[in-house]
Image (tube, rainbow, N blue to C red; front, side):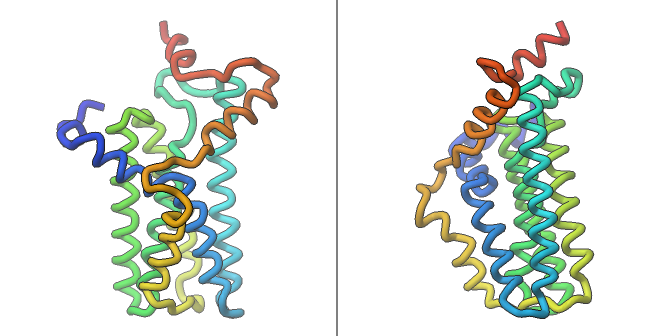
Length: 217
């Protein structure tokens, strides 16, 4: 992972950036997207599409993590223990959130906004590498999963009615987690999944990355 750009920036920068991919920030954001899409009857089918796609993404992330922590299902060669949740959620939510914020503008502006959201998600994925929170394979897999969600959503909703929401209202709604969480504070999602994995597998301790890498020795 030795990338000069990543190591040249201070950890404080990466910690600040990575928080925008935390489930404590993005789960409410995903809910707000569903709310905005549900405001008018004509756009409610699009809201259902979003909920189904995002829900599938969340389920796959959780399943991959539980499978590894509970049963050690991973790939030692690729150093893969499950999807990077921060990266997958970011690549799911941020392109759609930016597209929604640009909903009052023409199509090419909305597409450009979605591209900016994807670039932001890629930067969040880079933060997971810089902080040694995930391996390259986990970040790439998370990015692919998230892009599949946001890309499928944006492709299927094309030419369908979409809400025209003021960008400031979208931005304010997406920022509501700041009212309840101190910026930088992560949600206890990982710990909860760990408890679930231990109980489902009937083990005392979860499998760790060290256990996985030991298989290569």
